[in-house]
Length: 172
Image (cartoon, rainbow, N blue to C red):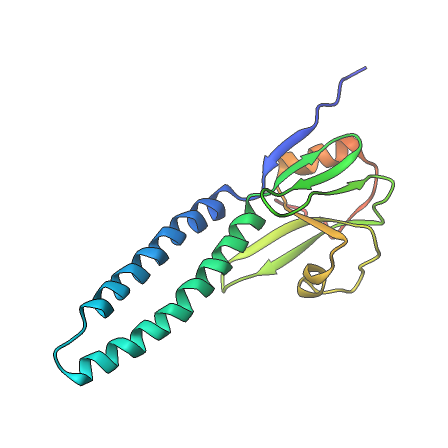
């Protein structure tokens, strides 16, 4: 009998690298603005303007760092598809999530449109019935695991389970 090997992969290497590169850039911008703020100006107008810029940057940079860090953690999750089920492991402060094949109530495909020509197709695994929900509603549900749909991942899922896949596109 053929030995079924589990498949491990990272959610999105590209998103993780971009987010990790943006964090130092945000700190650099903050540092430059802080440097100019400390230098000050000779007249009151430039000092007031620098104070306003410093306050805006002091709010924007930490907020953007938080957003990009959160996205980097989400994007760099390690997924494992095995004969037991699917598992998502995130690093640092996030705990892992595992769904056994017996627990999965619905397995299907959904699309996220992010621009005029940009469309991402996801394969989702859910412990509850989701029929009729939009991607935004699904994304708020904590009992779902999403992965980017590729031919290789689809074949691996079909190798381990006989669950029907809803809304499967005819061409990947």
